[in-house]
Length: 174
Image 1 (cartoon, rainbow, N blue to C red):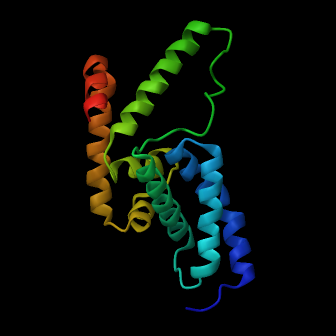
Image 2: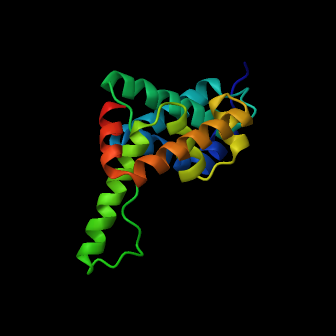
């Protein structure tokens, strides 16, 4: 294993810092913890990333694994969107905001209930916009497996979102 050139490290930080942070924040739901994971990920890249062929996938994989470790220690795994409500909502329409808040919380709970790696694929593919190939590379699985897991995750989310009473029962009992 060779030493990582400082220029390659700086380029990786410039290009991928925000994405690594967003993935960590989405998985952990805590800005401070996400910042810690992001720092740990880049420290690990500095120490061991010289031979990484696909920097972005390597960084996301390390960040995801660190998040999963932290969540296992907390005995829960969940997704939290790090961003606020969409700006398109008129804040004067309190009923629409309340309905959107309720829908957002139901979706968060439904995503939280997905098993791994479905949860991570939804986070990376649907929310971070990564390609199926990038998701496969990041998670160390085949593109076909990504398609299968994504299909299953979407089907479960669709069912959970269409049937609120069933969804609450499914989410609570996994």
